[in-house]
Length: 332
Ligand code: NAI
Figure 1: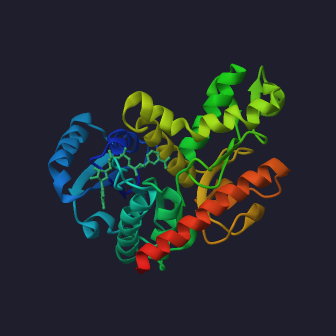
Figure 2: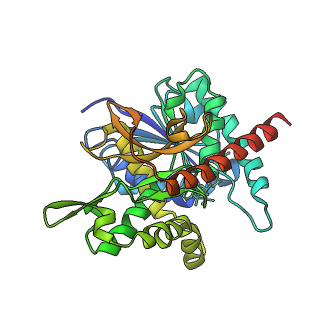
């Protein structure tokens, strides 16, 4: 068995972390042979709750978990970490405008970027989950100039998993039979869930999802809107935001980043845009990627029709606006 790696989860006393910590600890992310030490960061008022989480992790008696360190000090949390799950953020409260949320959260991600820059390993892989995830990841990377920009990613895997589940249910196949769904752009209601490159396994035959669904209108309207609004629909039912599914998605994202994607399959990740597919540069934009040896690469050459071009433009514009707002907040 190899040496334990250090993994940090921020917002460790929150609801996503409550599911995520167990998944990480038992080997879902780094594999069954990789021991780890978990660093749990939250804010001072949450230290009592965090103590309870630490007790529960101990009581899980997980052999791969070689240590758990709860802290409210970013220096302790980020020193020498190999993987960072940045989940902690201020949730939107009643009466709060989107701008107020952006304002509170980009400042958190500036501070955490600076701490990663100073204390983390230079090859640390950073996954930003806290919203607005794409712009938080961009800000975090800007304040960590000694760490390569490609090491900062934002989570759109929950949207991808939601899209995969919708297509599987529509066709009536297990969700594992559906692959290569794409989420383009922002993790927000402007995202473009795109089923036009997805493939489905039916009775040992591989078909395009569009051929299996046989309803282009559904794919362009009901499917897109259902995925875009799924987060709000879960909140309406549960009175709390998606947590178990968000944790599973974070675990899927980091596992694929560390261990690679299967041959012929791609996954969606928010990454610093190089302008592929006409997306704006210098924003964190969700693209289809393949991953090998810990490095992601944007899938190139997929045909993009007029509908997709329009959808990509909308979400790209929103990300450019968010970047301007975030920079204005930080420089104010
Ligand atoms: P939560 O409110 O249950 O937990 C958030 C935790 O973060 C709290 O314990 C809070 O004390 C902590 N926190 C706040 N500021 C912090 C800081 N500066 N450093 C460390 N910890 C800090 O929220 P939940 O449900 O766990 O969600 C966390 C974030 O994930 C939210 O921003 C939510 O909008 C986002 N989210 C993102 C998704 C995605 O697909 N990208 C999906 C679902 C949620």
